[in-house]
Image (cartoon, rainbow over all chains, first blue to last red):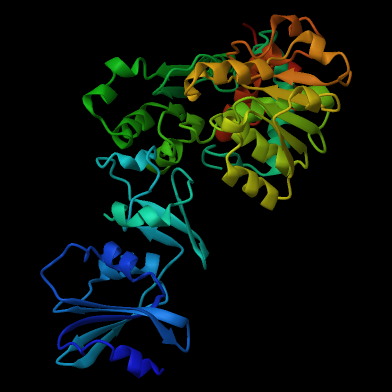
Length: 158
Length: 316
């Protein structure tokens, strides 16, 4: 099945964002990280586990009437760093956005360890997670050094 | 080196060089020689949770070297209780002092303080995280007994899960190629991520529940306290604690130069009968806290310890 065919499993959107090449099975985590789960104001289409030449299989998300911001892209980098993001305007791709996962993720999520010094929201220094490995992703808190629970990151979005 | 937050802040050569400084400072730590290398310098002691040995030995170390100490005092009466952030506390103390020794219940607090401070921070324990100055005094004690750190067989016993002392020490011993035997109840095993981290760094690690069967060919037996509150059930605690209680009769077949260490305070895990044996080293270990911290204070304040301290001392 072609990539084009996969994309057409759901209707083309007029305006909004398409997130393609999400690792298979990760679409729900992406929605959680973007805070879209529970948001009933925008139509969202989800395609999971469709064949992909590049990835074997993949997930795709289309969010109508909403363009991802830079801070949302930073969050996306933590669950789907290889995803492709396209902004759609009037049924056409108006912009392709790059996801950059640097060596450190600053002020995107807070450390998932419950006894980390950064748990006090009044402490002013930035939240810093170091990328210690990219595939599979491993993060450690700059302060407490604890490995991060990736499944809990969505609950710690700043 | 800005401060000392984890043992990763020191190379092996730096560790050995600081232990050399500590060796030369022994007569100063014992009060036999007055050597005011840190005269005019002020240490800020910020202990946000209780400490006896660490706080007192930092204070003694600074005063033996002619320096002075200011204390945060009781957390219950300080500005912390009014809701002051660690960042603000550090900003204040940073202005009052030349170096800060700190213990805090939250993990990562020492690194956080270092990022907020201009002066060096000495981590005196952050939650279940690191306790590198304890590791330095442990290494000093081991080197004193064996004349070396490399290639020793070290048994770490008791609560290996929650004890930050054994976490920092096992990392350091791995760097010197020691063989590690972790003897603990199943419930209090060394955390898996630490064991795999040590193995990735080339450690030869054996895990066992049998303490007494592990000590006969060891060079060091490092005991830790098993805390009752870690157990849901009192019988289970009694069974575990009983299996990790070292008595002089267990030492009949150990190596002549094997040493028994403990970060103190001990409760029941080392019977007083061990105190009189040639193997007991825990009280010297506690004393070594002073000399190791003296050497660290000098190093972090960029004050050189003279090669011959006897010629450099002054009048009391």
